[in-house]
Length: 375
Image 1 (spheres, rainbow, N blue to C red):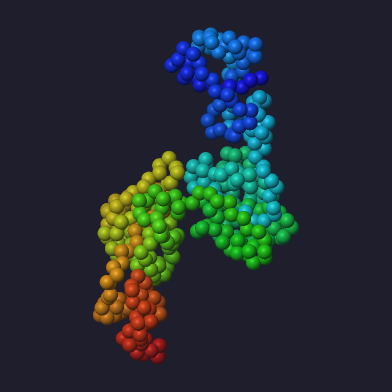
Image 2 (spheres, rainbow, N blue to C red; image 1 turned 120 degrees about the horizontal axis):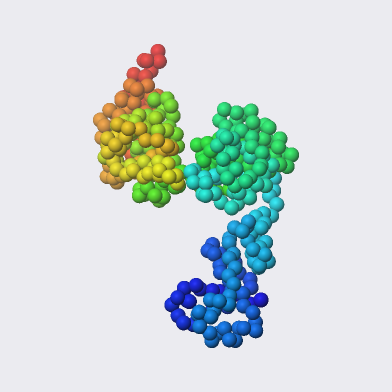
């Protein structure tokens, strides 16, 4: 049988059809492929016939790039690719599998192969992950693995891995271990020389940063802020003094508190971006200053997962704070209950002065005060 590529539009634009040889071996195509089956004995006459005659003498076959809709006439190599998603057996070990942060289509072919081949899938929320597995008809057993049972599950999982099983770890969304369970398990496996295999996938951090419009050449991922007030303030002060773009995960009900604290520490004029419900139906990127964000979101609380980005601090080469400025900053931090060393660390961040010089100033100004308090 002779295979020819068929262009349907050529019949509409020309009285004679043009056919291009269609090779027997071809790679997988993302678009539908139309082929024409011609009887050898009519080929000479067909080359000189009109398009109206051609339209009565060919049959069309449709090849899809989906395994379930491939046809028996597909080439052997393509048929094999479509029907067999497994390339080679997976070696035993822990597989950290990235999963969609919203849209279920945002998953890699490799991730699907690993989830299908694993002996067990560790899941942060088995009900949530069950929807993803059902969507892709994956029958692998699920085992809950979250922040409340990490320590208890670790030894159970370790025994499975030492017995040569394939264990896949997924979180509710994105990459395991990034502000999600998995960090301790990966460390444990690395210490025991058990293979830890990353299966790259979606990440809210990179997704938000890439579309934010803020500098992407350097950034700091902070994640969720500490719950304790002083610890949270310490972290925000460090972030406010960095020149890199800062990225936070903010629960919707904490957004108002975050904006109040950020405005006081970063300054109201710093540019920021709120990325909400990324890859989902109601995806939103809001851009403006921190003060504008306060005005926009203090009145109403947005829904969905929030990734918040703040531009880095512009540090002038000539910036050199006076001794009185340093003293005032140190006094404020110490009065809030920070230790002398932590106050020095926070004041030194983002400044061109050496920490040793600021520490000497702190000892000179406040060393005696702290010693008397200890007494």
